[in-house]
Image 1 (cartoon, one colour):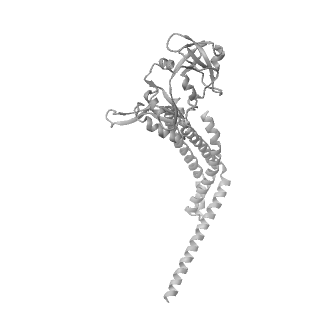
Image 2 (tube, rainbow, N blue to C red):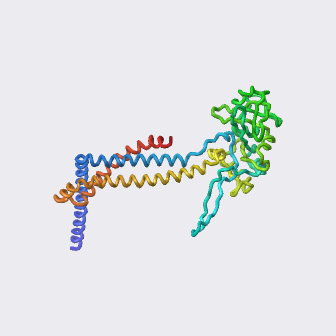
Length: 375
């Protein structure tokens, strides 16, 4: 008798589960049917939702692409293309301010002017493991004949940009310089004379050699002896940066770690010198790159947040209007036996189908729109 009752209860439970599954399947079929018929009948209403969703997706995708490219981008490596690593001073400073009536706040700012390294860091970098050569790199603005602006550097620093002699020889005295191919055309090449103005009256120098990188678009440059350039720079106890050439087979990570240990806390600003390798070497050339990128990120993030709020409002409004225009139809369906669950499921299916197709179209349009915004 007890076994018969147990089998009876189990049978009723199984029947209830089957009935529940049938009900859920019926709800899904009814919802799918209502969604298909509604999309066919109310094309204009859903077209507005489709257009708003596609435009919002394209705009948000474009902003995401711009933000992503800004996060991943960095200044190009030109001046230090031939260096395996660059040692520079920390360009950031941390300060604490206490506004009136508020708690103290600590912030970090990027310094627009170059913070220089103590010249003793050059020897420490040269002694680091895996370093073949460390070159002190200073630069001065030079005005050549006919008003041409060029960069003045020491001849040893030419190796950091992969300059090589194409004629003549390296400078040996304070009155000799090596010029690039552009200046060589005006001076007549090795043995010619070129007028340069640096820190006072213009002065004539003898062209001892001509150098080039073999690449187009290189910044025009003129190279002095190291002693002459140090005097022209006007800060003999410090250097702008240190270019490092590694020994054969030394990896970038190993070189960075070795240099970091060698120059740590040695006269490089508030946090000590920084060692830059790979794409990070461009930061040594463009001092304002990090600060400008931070400002752009803040501005674009605020604009993107505003765009998100506006697009959500527009999509919600168009969707609400599309459903409101069908209030009479939904009431009639409710009167003939449609359950609230079926109606909600039907509207959700309609919105999902429209939004899915619109999102795909908007994502495809985000790429050209993002490229247009970047340009």
